[in-house]
Every structure is written in C-alpha cells, then in structure tokens.
Image (cartoon, rainbow, N blue to C red):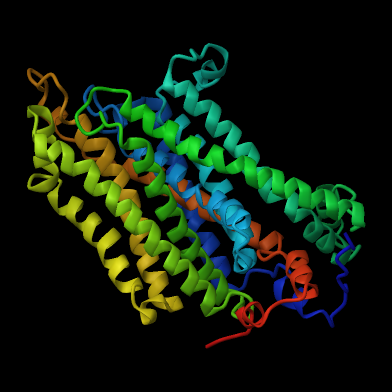
Length: 450
C-alpha cells in the first residue's frame, strides 16, 4: 500500500480543521464544572471510605443501588465502540469514518469508569485484587471481571493503533520550544514514519481488532446480564436477559455517540466533515436499534405479566401501577417511544432533533438500569419483616449521588482532554478517503450542508 501523503503545512485544510485546539472560554468553563463535580464526588468517597457503606442507603435487602445501575449503564454505553468501529467497518459502511474515533474514546472512557464504579461499590476496596488472586471460575462475577478487563484492553488498542499516524502529525507540527508536548507525542508515536509497511500493518491490526471486538462486546453485555439472570429473583430470573441487555446497550451506545458528535461538531466547526447525512444515517440506525430494544422490552414484561406468579406479580405491579410506575412509564415513553416516532420523519432526523432525542435515550437508559436493579431487590422471595422500616425502601444518599455524578463527569473529562490533545477525526483516514476514487454518492456525503 502506498503511504498516505499528508502535507504538513498551512495549505492543508484537513490540518487546519482537525488538529486539536486550545480550550476557549466556554471550554475552560466546561472543564471547571466537571472538575468541581469530580472533587465533590471524591470528597463523598473519602467519607464512604472512612465511615463505610453505612453512609449509603444500601442495606441487607437493597445491597446494590445506583452504583451497580451506573456500572451497567457504563457497560452499555461502551458498546458504541464495537458498533461504529467494528460492525459498520465490517459491513463496509463508508460514512462511518468521521465518527469512528469519537465512538472509540466514548467506549474506552465508559468501560474504564465501569471498572472504577465496581471498586467504589465494594465495602473493602483494598481487597479488589482478591478477585484476580482468589476468584472462583464458577462465579459469574469472575466471568465479568475477565471479560471487562479483556474488553478494556482490546478497546484501548482499537483506539490507540489507528491514532498512531495522527500522533506522529502532532509530533511533527509541535514546535521544539514546547519540550514536554514534543516528548509526549514522540513517546506515544512509537517511531511512526508513515512508510508503506507501517500502513499495511496498521490496516491489518485494525481488521483483526474489529473482528475480535465484536464477540467481546456481545460477551461483556451477555455476561453482565448473567450476574442478574443466574439468580432466582423476580425480575431477573429470565432467559431473555442476554439479548435484552445487548439490544439496550446498542441503543444507548448509538444515542451516546450522536449526542457527543453533535456537541463536538458545533464546538469545533466540523460541519464540513460531520454532515447532516451522518445524523440522518445514525438516526435511522437508532430507530432500528430502538425498535429491536422495544421488542425485547415487550418480551421481558409480557411473559411474566401473563403468568403473574406471586413474587413476579408484586414486582410488576410496583413497576406498572405502584411506587416506580411514574419512572417506569417515563422511561418507556420518553426514552423509547417518542424517539422512535420523532426519527421516523425526515425533519426529526436533522442534527438538532436527533441530538435532543438522543439525550432522551441516554437519560432513559440510565434510569432503565436503575429500574432493573432496585425494584427487584425490594421484592425478595422471603418477605421483608422484623426489620427497620427504612429497609423496605431505597433512596440514594447525597454521597451516592455525588459519587455517581463524579463518575459520569470523569468519563466526560476523559473525552474532553482527549479532544484537546488529539484529532477527534482521523486525519490520515480522511486523507486516504480523499485519495481513493469515490462514487458521486460518496463524494456528496462529505459536502457541507446547512
């Protein structure tokens, strides 16, 4: 393969548009806000370490709370890396290129904080290493540890390896006077020189990782669902949970990349590269994924609702007409039904409407995970009796909310600093596409549109 030739001068429009830029006033304000949230969450976690999990509202019955809800949410969002980087690549979808790196950094940030939130949920975090040293392969928890660790490694490689040519560009364009930045990019570039052999190797690596990450992505969400489904609890005891979790993760991940893409597109003036066509295509994909997830939701509730066994009946009543009914129906309507209806129409697939409904899907996805975890724990087989009244309910304390918000802010900080340091759209892949003969349809894809 011929090396991709990129002119390292001001005449190269790609470099002008796509090279990382310094934070402006709004960017600094955004970073400051996220850092404040992280600091408050860190303070709350220090309190939790000092006093124990008693500062949370988790008790013997609700032993999992919003920490595990947040964990499942992060795992779901992380699927976006395999969706855009792998599945669309293997399907030879050309328009995916400007969205690839965005999806990959979202995936890495999400799965990294999924691992962190598990440590936060532990009463004795210093024993975390026991999972690796003394784990029993019979336990689904160990399965989850193995698959999350593997997925984090592969996702990081899928982000880092295609980034090498662009890191080298940053290295070559950084002035010698910026010694630390020069060293930083030189170290990460791994002696990249842009030879034909290196480009051949990088394409092979991307293809191998794209194939490898798909079964891993399906595995991480299936294994996570088994943490719930291998119990006898009402609401979790379901053979539908594997595909149910995977479908929900695809939907949430797709919505997540749309929301982040919209913000970056407007903030960094990338309308020339991320066009209305991208939002239209991603919206169509999101409609399809939402319809699939809607099917699994109907399947998940219809069958136990038809049988209405005693414990299942109590659980479903709390969701349909009881304490959690307002949240349950809000999630179904605003997190699934409304987005489907809006995006079925062409005007609803314009960038701003798609951004709004994607935010609705992401928020709905978080609360959906809350509904999966908490109501089930409050309906055990053995009735809750002879215990304090507070054990019958679960309301997260400010420490739990602060730590959860800090984990979400931390993931956004990772994405924010990545955009500051590296090109968020692959310069070498865009150059490669421009050098490849295209059909009229593919050429029109990258034309700037209103």
